[in-house]
Image (cartoon, rainbow, N blue to C red):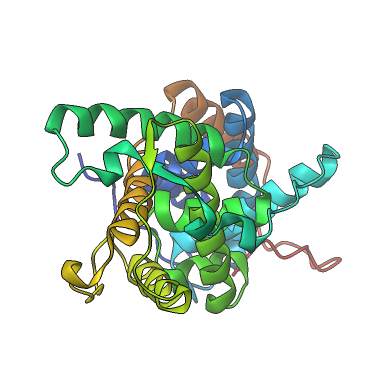
Length: 292
């Protein structure tokens, strides 16, 4: 069953919030599972997002998509939870250490000219498990853009809007996150000696940038116009590994909103409405903005 359309700005909270919950709750729960390290924390984060949305909905003016608005709240809530818990964000590995050109091996699957279908399926299944584990180990400033773009499928512009960052900043962090996941994924995969590069290093760097830009536009091959014949065996293997990372991320998107969590959030909405003062609300201190 398809979810109901997103409620329009000005829709009463009592009907708007359940509609938002049914339409975006499953994806927000999927987001929370990739941002948190256990399901209990993920459930708490989703409930916190909708509590903030409950208070902020009367001020929502529709200048952004309701889903992007909720992701903005989720990103802010996640960062605040990390600070409250005193969890220091892991320092990102230097970009030079993530680049593949100094490595002596590539994954056996990526290097195979015609990989066996069963081996490919098995390796992809293992890749999903490795990537899912490694996503939670990424520094938060890399993890948030990656999950929004590669797991939930937001565009670069929508991810930038959700996090309040420039699109180019999102791209830079995405590129670093993909390379970090590739390195973690390949570290425990069956490997073979890496083919020697046949181009100058700068050519390979330009090809890698073109590959990343194509992934930014929405897919593993979309807009990547370099013919395979123009790629050396080493670049082809590295690009296959990046495709495996992206496929693994996309495979994490599906998730259901636990019925017990949905009931809990609905009960909070109902209690809020039952105790809401009738008539116009007196203006006091300016409330903290939770989104637009």
